[in-house]
Amino acid sequence: MTDNRQSQQEDISALIDGALQGAEATHALAELLRGDEALATWHRYHLIGDVMRSQELAPAGFELRFAHRVMDCIATEAVSPHVTNASANANANANAAIATPWAPAPMNQSPANAANHAPSRSVWRRALAGGIGAAACLLLVLGSEPLRDALTTHQAPQAVAQVPSAGSPMAAEMKAQNIPSQNTPAQEVALDDRPVMARDPELDALLSAHQQMGGHSALQAPSGFMRNATFARPKP
Amino acid sequence: MMGSGDAVESTDGLLVERTLAGDHKAYALLVVKYQRRVQRLIGRMVRDVNLVEDIAQDTFISAYRALHQFRGDAKFYTWLYRIAVNCAKRALLDLKNDPVSLRNDSSQEDETFSNKPDQTNHESPESLASAKKLAAAVNAAMDALPDDLRQAISLREIDGLCYEDIAVAMGCPVGTVRSRIFRAREAISAKIKPLLEKQTSKRW
Image 1 (cartoon, rainbow over the protein chains, first blue to last red):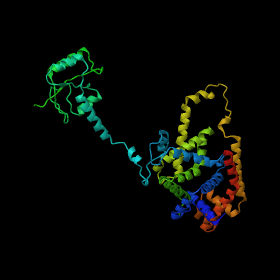
Image 2: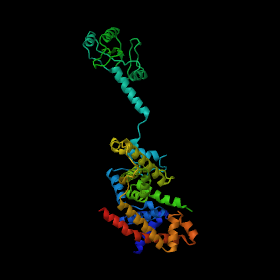
Image 3: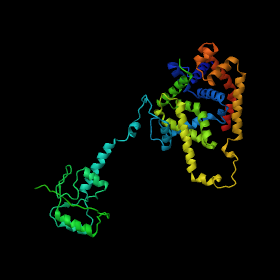
Image 4: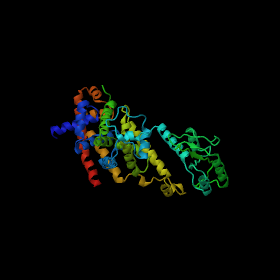
């Protein structure tokens, strides 16, 4: 054994026992990571210790094959220790064993980490409420002929808004948006910067009659409670 | 003075840091170091030897994915141990719920089922013989060591003492302890290397 190689082997032995610190440890580790022979030495030294402590730990087969398989899997899956979108299996197992996050920040904060943070709930709620509210106010129900006929008798174009039943989630959202309910008398409803809607009592009566007759909207779904709404046209 | 446990943890910590810095080979060193213990642990929970290696592989991959969450103040093997246990439990649960294995499990239906050990759940005779031979070679090599080398490596590997404590116990400098342990390992390595190479060649 050459002096250099012997020195390297001795460093590996000391590194295994945690007897090297600082720059010495870093240097020894760098040498260890350089070649397969050093890995084989690392493997043998650890194997000796394990077998000395327990005969059960004596290996039956080629052990480095196992390590190669693990590392091949890691390389094939392009798994990163920073990425948390691993399989549910792996995550469930790992997360079950983990109490709190690593104290020092990782050297490379992966963008995947940031991407994995869910947007705040308030952002989602606002976006959803706004969308539903606008949709509920501006939804046009133009399916049935009697309804279409009723609409064409009026000079001004009208939009009929289908208001959901009181207990539905959409009703709750509309309430949140300050959209008037069934019992509110005809009035203008301001919807952000959209044209103001006004209700026509005559149309209300026609729609109510329609509801009693068929009760279905153009979408072939129960119409439930219906209201009419009219866009107020700007005066020329 | 760093205790023996702290000393080893510092090496594991170094390997974890290197892995997180992007050096996959550092993780391979951790796998090589702990694979036997992990497989033994899993083998005590799962009878089917064919599954042990798969679950062990799953364990190391899970640990790798979660490495950034590893607390630096906990022992790495303690953390790895819990992951291994969870992987084994999950595998057992999957086996239990697998309709195919339930259908093929004669113990559920066969009135004549006996408690004879199933040969397919154990390692092959050849594998067992190979492991025994290796263990015997380590023991024989230990017996053949000079007293000072045998004592130094025993105090380190079996009693878990750090170099400083061994130096006190043996009445010699730390440098001498380091040298003796290294020479003991080299002597034992020389005896088991042919056996390990034989296992390697059988693989191919």
